[in-house]
Image 1 (cartoon, rainbow, N blue to C red):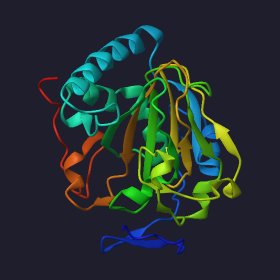
Image 2 (cartoon, helix red, strand yellow; image 1 turned 45 degrees about the horizontal axis):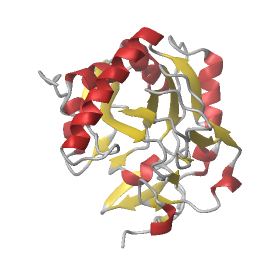
Image 3 (cartoon, rainbow, N blue to C red; image 1 turned 180 degrees about the vertical axis):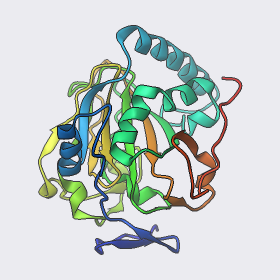
Length: 276
């Protein structure tokens, strides 16, 4: 049984690692991709949505690429959720992680120096019956301090019909929250559930057009229902952090300096894979 983490203000332990799990607001005074109002909204609500980073033609090419990657993954025994840390395996995904309009958003949220360390396709096939329970990303990661943001790229159009994500606005300001192991009957893609999550703020559906992104704090409560429609819903989660963030369990090997520099030397700064 995994440890159940409690909402102790400021610091938590995971696998013996003392972590700073306070929300650290963006201090960017002259944002380039976002407006000052958007930076203020991110600090207040914990997220932004409907930010365009690819035009229709560009996202069509990415979708065709993912269709082929998914076909290969399924043929080899994987499933539609198993394509993870993909930027270390596939040059095309590395190019998405380092795509300038996406990195510019991360920079406005995290500061001029940015590490890209995560890339995971969350692909809900039509009628697959799997949900993502309310959770905080920071619960899963052996990293400190809490200066990580997720940029979620819509490969397919995501709406209420095909089970788009929902965020709980402002929930990142409550710190690290108690969770339990998900029950089998929840059909959760992950393994953690925060109960009564709606008490922490307003539930906001995050409907995105293909080629748009949302960005959210690693402490923001979020989740999604099962896709009961006849349409696929695929998104690529891209994880970014400040270089000062330390990672245990060799997670530092996932890191790529996508903006500025890593003066701390905490991350490996991996090169682009030569093949797909």
